[in-house]
Length: 103
Image (cartoon, rainbow, N blue to C red; front, side):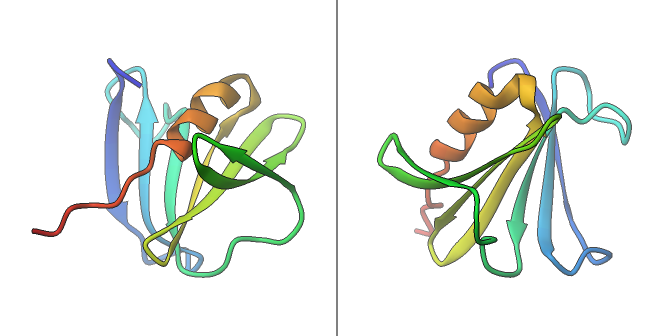
């Protein structure tokens, strides 16, 4: 989203996540992350609902307070997650992931 802040870290404490990026509408601190984007070390979990959106295949998990969207790109798996009230933003972020041009 425009006018949002983000910060990224390479994680070592969570074997499921290779890199984590936090997003917020304020300067990022450890306490105000709204949406997280994770580069996953493993596979996308089974279950959830499959959705094709903006040309991407997405896997959706909606819980009472949390919304998670999984997708794959360039042989990597990603998770975008946050509070259910941000589900439209989470869905758009997941569908907007694009490969990095390595030229």
